[in-house]
Length: 221
Image (cartoon, rainbow, N blue to C red; front, side):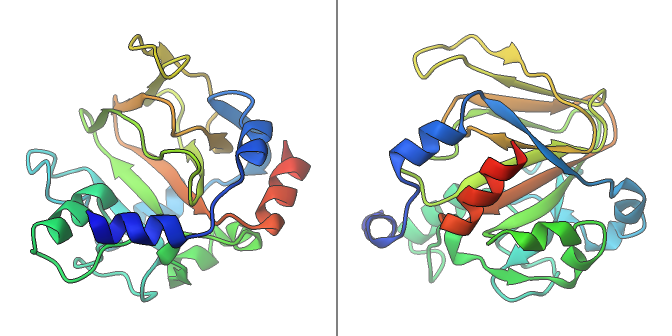
């Protein structure tokens, strides 16, 4: 993984003091709401299976809002675990490796219920569509300092369980508390997992490490 390490070292990152200042909890509620469920239901053909590392989860899907080329298609590598893609690069199976911050082109789908997100400088972002039993196993998404911040939210808080560890040494996961359609700044450097009880959508939004984003987050918390 020498190439991805090189790209990571060269990339802009969120300063540690700003990261710590913003992430006062695992989930920090923002005064920012999106209600897109009805729209997403009408666009089921634009959701594609989330990667190929867990082929048993055929209904775990995503629709790109920000990717490499602004197109929604089944070959979109932004729809899936980025670490798994980069492992393929390490094995010589793909031509390029990427960081979250390399994805900056808006798709047309951001222009509807998610249009307010365009106030941010965005990285790889998508809407996740899960059905009963779909999940993410316990994991962390970033090491600090990180090249991106992450916003998260869900269309129905009663249909998904999000759990987290209280600190980096803790292996016991606790239920997080959240409201439907509200966006949260999430600390993905902490161990966490997720499980769908029923048909549900999630907001999976990356923010670039820019002063504009820091100011917007401070304004809305």
